[in-house]
Image (cartoon, rainbow, N blue to C red; front, top):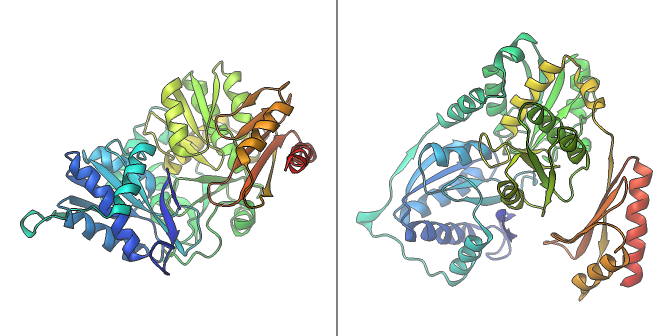
Amino acid sequence: MKSISGIRGTIGGKPGDNLTPIDIVKFTAAYGSIIRNNGGKKIIVGRDGRMSGEMVRSLVVNTLIGLGLNVIDLGLSTTPTVEMAVVFEGADGGIILTASHNPKQWNALKLLNNKGEFISAEIGKQVLVLAEKEAIDFAGVDELGNYETDDTLLQTHIDAILAHPLVNKELIAAKKFKVVVDAINSSGAVAVPQLLKALGVNDITVLNAEMHGNFVHNPEPLAENLVELCNQVVQQKAHLGIAVDPDVDRLCFVSDDGNLFGEEYTLVAVADYVLSNKKGNTVSNLSSTRALRDVTEKHGGKYYASAVGEVNVVTKMKEVNAVMGGEGNGGIIDPQLHYGRDAMIGIALFLTHLAQSNLSCAALRKAYPDYFMSKNKIDLPKGTNVPAILAKVKEQYAAFPVNTEDGVKIEFEKSWVHLRASNTEPIIRVYSEAPSVEEADKVAKDVMEKIEGLM
């Protein structure tokens, strides 16, 4: 899978079909060549705890050295730490070795520019073309790059969070929070407890703390995968639970009553706190909850929607000068720290908000409007003209506000439905949201029936 979020695939199999060593070297060499040909010299590399991580790291690092590039290897790290390290070290780019929430057989190369942000679609296309042509010129023996390791940059990342003007360590410490963390056998087992202790939280239980990458459960932080965390929060009478994905850029909370705070509401709660201290606009993608718009407008700001994908959210945030943004999958982007999804700053801001509110986690969740999401899909026959179908849907709902920036999103009075073609499967994804589960399902069903009629 080649997209704006990187080169992703399963380990093993045949070159070109899966993410084999040959593919890893080819795409790394293409990216490194573009950095070098534009005058770059230094690259940051870090990985999550996946079983294939060390193998992929060795191939990537040595390919970059073979191009004559200097590498700073963070070893086991987090996606936001690598992003920030690019800036800390004045590097020319970075590669994060993680397939994020995908199961253990997956890995990926996430490619960064010199700002520690994901490369643009234009640069991404150049990487694909260069890799396909294999027009790579490696360095001679006298021009090989240098290699060094640095395990201090996670602490540098945490120090930057502690220095954030809206993070109140003293207030958090005074609450003596008891926290249970699901680290899903990856980098969060180190990063999250280290952050919590720096914030003055010392009563910490870490589930799935062994960083072997053979994930105990599906690593995506969804309800069906967090049953153990929910149970442990109640059994241990903890104030809250924290779940992150393997590379620590997505964040989900469990309330003290054992119920999920709601992945969609991670961003809502953090945005509410930030906006109460810093007026401005917010951004999330078109498939994220309407509750962010409600909270933003409550504080006098304006909400904007972007196309799906972190790169698109960041681009829109810069366009509208947003003070907070992210995605409904638990991705927090705070431009006061950096333009990247970061569970670490999300934890620090949420704990400050929770401490300041003097509410339990469950009571804080009840302070926000309730919306319920329904996620469906329509299987497409071979040769289906998806753009033509979506254009007809737009016509049929012309009486309502319609956004066509990424597929078709139709806004109703208290609900919405978002239709977009999948980049990886022959399907149309149908996301809907309403004040009740029944209404959300009905909105989706009505539109899906229309689409099936058109097909």
